[in-house]
Amino acid sequence: MIISITRIELAARGRSARRAFTLPEVIIGATIGSIVLAGVMSAFLMLSRSGVNVANYSASEAEIRRGLEDFSQDVRMASNITWNSDSSITLTVPNNYAANSNRVTYSCAATAPGSTVRSFYRTPASPSASGGQLIYVRNVSSFAFARYNRLDAPATTDNETKRIQLTLNVRRTGQTTVAANTMAISASYLLRNKVAN
Image 1 (cartoon, rainbow, N blue to C red):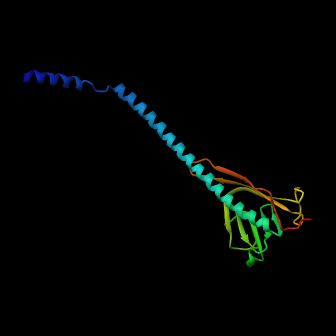
Image 2 (image 1 turned 90 degrees about the horizontal axis):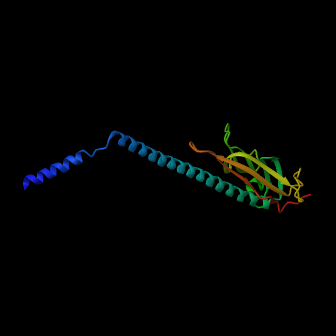
């Protein structure tokens, strides 16, 4: 009896030893595994790039929202405006900025000497005043103020200016992602306290 069990075990072991993978089976399995891993890796990279783009859009929109809120508040309270250029205006805001003769300047320019990166920022007093910059939006690729008279036609002088609007485009890039462009066109803000001709 003992001999017959041993022979049965040996026969079973012999059959299982012969059940190994052949070389073509190993090559096919490795190829399929590589294809699956490549698909998983590309999906992971695509999702991470999408996440970076979403973060860039979100950061740009938060900066723009904050800048437009402060800008609109000052424009609505302003009693006078000085048009410095298409990218810089100075507002006289009664009861605000008392240390600077109630004047504040909103501009879009490079904030550091020699830098090509432009930012939308606020500076108390005149545009030539140094220090005290509050940067709202960084990485601005295009920017322009537009001014209108009380009939909503384009204004040509400071005296007839009654509304201000700004347009800006923000471009953020990552090392391995496509640039995220965010364009914002503000409402046409009314200078409520300014007498227009």
